[in-house]
Length: 293
Ligand SMILES: Nc1ncnc2c1ncn2[C@@H]1O[C@H](COP(=O)(O)OP(=O)(O)OP(=O)(O)O)[C@@H](O)[C@H]1O
Ligand SMILES: [Mg+2]
Image (cartoon, helix red, strand yellow):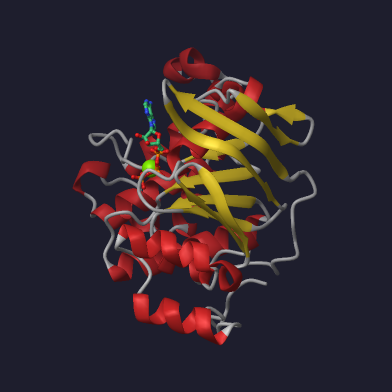
């Protein structure tokens, strides 16, 4: 992977994600109610909200795990809301999981290689028999795996079993594995959940670099409002299944309804900071140096 390019270098085959009026019900519970937003190509877009707001449900709709009762999700010519998870993966949408879903006994390299299986033409059998084409292909994929590992600062851990890595490293392996599928859209489910401050900063940096170096779109589901403020271009805020705000981090941070939702939940936004942001209008605290614009 080359040096990070300007944020403007968006890959030409990355269409917007258009989420339009999506409603999801589980029996009597309406987990999402007519939610709409657009993920612009090459942006980092965050979906945030208190517990039970519907964030994971939205993520599962986008990756084909849950079906919307109403509404649609479009990605270029594709209707994601009508596709199965493997079909969605096949058109270049990759996801990481909220809970680590790696094979602990296998090495980092082996786990990353799993992300490339749909790209290998030789297939499992030929690879198992070490046929010439499979060996050649394997080498090319191996090089790409090493490159992606390096990109996520896992280069020296390629041959380490995933199970012995730190939690932060394991989460980066998850992201690396998703990148190994060469996605156009990367869906990250709470990538910093359970991380300490240093691990959180490293992951945030990685997300920004992924976007700028690869020119793909990143949709981030996150509980932690603070984390998204420094790296998201745009934020959609959900509360009780409804979209209560959508805008730049600075805009949503001072939105009275957002502040109310977060204060009610008793976490994430520092009440004093939020009140100050609401009172002062344009918040300078969210204009973090280096934030992509
Ligand atoms: N498979 C399911 N069956 C029944 N109810 C569900 C299911 N998945 C989610 N829900 C309900 O839908 C609502 C939204 O849940 P969701 O998991 O999407 O919230 P969330 O924003 O991801 O919350 P958290 O921050 O706690 O992860 C909740 O009331 C939840 O109980
Ligand atoms: Mg969730």
